[in-house]
Amino acid sequence: MVHITQRKLTKLHLWNALFVTLLTLSGLLLYSSFWRAVLGEAKVWIKWLHISIGLVSIVPVLYYLGFAARHWKQLKGKFWQRLNLIVVFTLLLGCFFSGVLLWQFQAAGPIVSNVALAVHDLLVWIGLPLILYHSLTKLGRLKEPPRYQSKGEGSFYTRKAFIRTVIGAGLTISVIPSMIKWIGDLGSGQGVQVNKEGANKLLPTPQPLAESAPPIGGGASDSFRSYSVTRLPFFNNDNWFFTIDGLVEEPITWNWEQFVALKRSVQVSDFHCVTGWSVYNNTWEGIPLKELLEKTGVKPAARVVKLYSGDGVYTDSLTLEQADMDDIMVAVMHDGKPIPNELGGPVRLIIPKMYAYKSVKWLNRIELIEENYIGYWGQRGYEHDAWVQG
Ligand SMILES: Nc1nc2c(c(=O)[nH]1)N[C@H]1C(S)=C(S)[C@@H](COP(=O)(O)O)O[C@H]1N2
Ligand SMILES: [Mo]
Image (cartoon, rainbow, N blue to C red):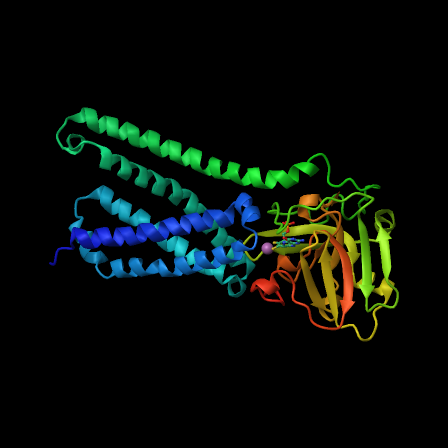
């Protein structure tokens, strides 16, 4: 049997360590709402970087698999090293395959994506403390005088090392995730705090229909992860208006009092983000887009419904044909309550059959136009027609 050299293993280890470090860093940048806000546009590039490195990171793993069986035999009797191998491989392959599924979200569909995201998250939360502990102890060991590493010092050092291991692992496991959560909250806090006391300052507060309160579907399955490519916009009765203009028979602008007086209806639907999370069973109350367009009338030349967010940046569009779907709603309430500012209130769009990036938050203008228009995420590489399959 050819012995696998330490050099070969070290080299492999270094490559793997490099990829894992880059993936961890880029992944944390993508995950934390603080960095999402700071990075803005760069987030798209970091996402592609993360995916590319993730794909390349399988190379050292495959290379290792070529002599894995021999290495395994070589580790005969070394229980901890074998366990370590199993753990590392579960983490690497688990992250890789769940990552591929998240990347291919459209082919995978929402349910598979939900599972892939849960697995990806879980493995990261298990893996991160392990990586950190591993690199810290490795670095620490380098500085230790050689006598500490010599065998046969008696049980004193072994016990001490064991205790140190337990304390070190405990600390890393408890501190790191909370630290990251904290960093994340720091960022989102800036905008969300403005609105902590209530959903919106707009008066009168809309009163839910009987089907909305309590929600017909029993309420949403989960909570939303609040996303915004801008700082949160904030509205009151003086600066909130809703306009439908462009190729319409008669443009209309409503103020809040007029808008809450419009007849609303209720629907239950699911909400899917391309990053793998979903919220099922939402009870939305609002005005079907179709009915809103009937109020202004649409000129024959109009082909496309362009949607504007009150954040001044985010836009999207639907063809008039798509806009005719009954379940597209200009929503005012969620599960019987006004939509909070963080989730796009006072008024947001809901397009249940498409991915949520089409569901413009803080919707305050609809323009009917002739030419096709590609929206915010469409311009950044996502499908313009964002159908959720199934
Ligand atoms: N104005 C605006 N609308 C938006 C977004 C945004 O960043 N700005 N993000 C979209 C994306 S990608 C998703 S997943 C949902 C998130 O909705 P939520 O923040 O209420 O969970 O809003 C969509 N609409
Ligand atoms: Mo999304």
